[in-house]
Length: 295
Image (cartoon, rainbow, N blue to C red; front, side):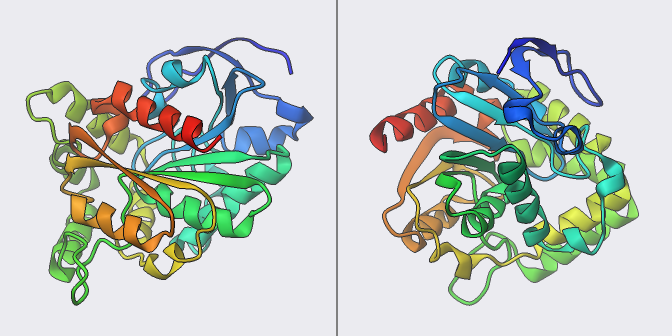
């Protein structure tokens, strides 16, 4: 596999120069372009597949990638409907379920012939990773779940952090004025009010998504319930949470940890829902420590 300097500017992105190639294993061009797949880092290192959350794209991993790439092979991609993915592949019905996204992850793994994959999923992509691991048990070997939530809505003794009324109001606000919703919600989701540039970056990322796609993806995300899927996880799993997170509170991370047999839980001394931006060094260190412990 050859390597060279690759720049990934795009909507909502700055130019990022990375040692990268878009042709791992001679994979079909349509698969690589469909998901804007980027491969970089050490070719013989552990294979990390980084998946972004709602309203984001692969660019939000840019601060952890330089820490991981010297020892790991890193694959970045955009979920359909986000970043520089092929928007013609969007389908409202397919992506009304997290399984649609999980099938996409499985497709990338098969078409690029990826094996021993460590799937690193942020936010909703954590549960996408859980589903993908069930679809491709021979390819996905480990999971890293960054600020995961299997269900955002409270249910009996389960506390997801939101009431049904909260989510209904959130979705109604998103439907009526997506850009306004993004400018209001992104800084809240990011946290770290003393670092407004982080909230501004997430706002900018949110605003790049087409409102119609965002409406479908938001419903898929905030109305999902993947609690039953956690018990099916049969691979080494790391859960990374923050001490304060309005989207996935610490008790949610504790629930995921208890539900996945043998999982590891790391609580970062960080706030907000996006530690890959607010605490990239600690986030990368947790991932590397997990790889070393499960080698």
